Image: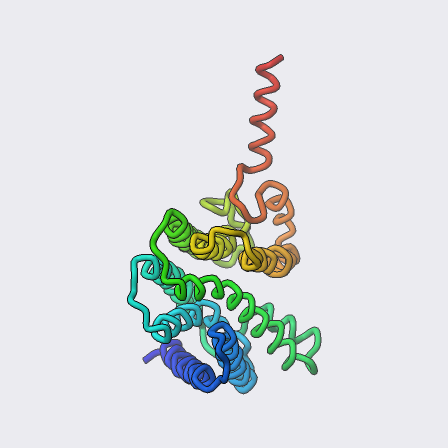
Length: 302
């Protein structure tokens, strides 16, 4: 048994314990609101993971939480409501499951063990070591937990309504599946590129990365727009939950992407040229190529 496999087993046990504590909290919360009970269970499970991350001196223990908990939560909702499963609920559940399995598998593939921590968490620690236990709790763990929870409110209400399948159900389903596929392709292209250029500080500029600087993040954001569209099909009106995918969008646009790009620029100044040529998030024609097309059209007209 390899060291990595042993640590994966320990992670499984850790998450099983955290989820069990969350289920216990859900069962004993005195509230009529399913959403409130789920939120408390989610927060409690996050606190358990946080405590373990402090004990293990590694905040990356939290990383798989992002993709594991949504499936656990939706499974719990279906069991709790004891609904007769219809096609609409199956489509939502399968879509989230496909996304979650792919993302969790990608995490497991890149997981090296408890000794290695995400560089972003180390940077946060170095900025303020004495307050790290709080920045770890609120910035690294609780904030993402709440962002994902907001996305799942619509999914929970969708299941509660036990809706019939309509065009929005299918549209949302296809968007989630297609977005997960975009993430799969982007991650594999990056993996292949890193393997070919090992030891070299090069910027990937091929495949999906030729048209978006962060196609994997684009796929992640679109997953949650797909989930919202499925929910929208049950209410057929714009309500407060429209903010859910926008919050996810903002998380990547204003926090994750700028942090990542500042790090890249410190070691690869040529990345600046890549930024000038390629769209940040949405895959679009490359800017210099678009300029060439415009110039060719102008030449033809003169």
